[in-house]
Image (cartoon, rainbow, N blue to C red; front, side):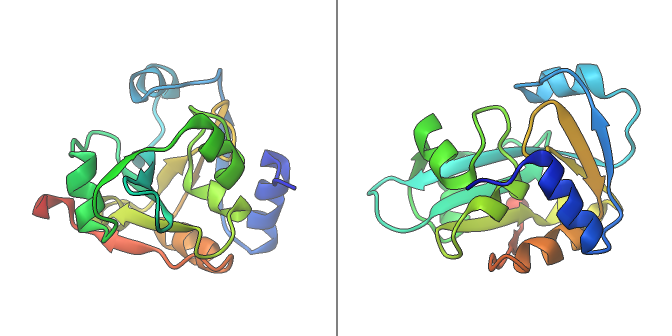
Length: 168
């Protein structure tokens, strides 16, 4: 059974993680997010859910600074996943429990440990006191510290890896 946005926010509160959630109309792209967010201080993200091109190995979830531009295959190699392609909507829903447009590192609460490798842009993780991600729905954004996000996900058996995208 997949976690609900409300259940996720309750888990964050129970873990003592300070999070600020803002509700807004659903957004499907970074551009739509920019238009709606107003003045939310911190790092804003984009998320890619990828699968190995050969079909073997775990999926790859990458959380990047919203303005980062990178080849998905360069990203895959840097993350140790090799050649990758975009995962399907069916794979996304089955693995992270979210539809397209709602990809988020919080989806890892629904993923079995080891089924997804999670990487985060080092510039995002170390350059901001607060970052914004979807709380399992693209009709809200939740701001929290990158360290709290990484610690929270590690508690679900997902060992995050920081990557230096400038190496791409």
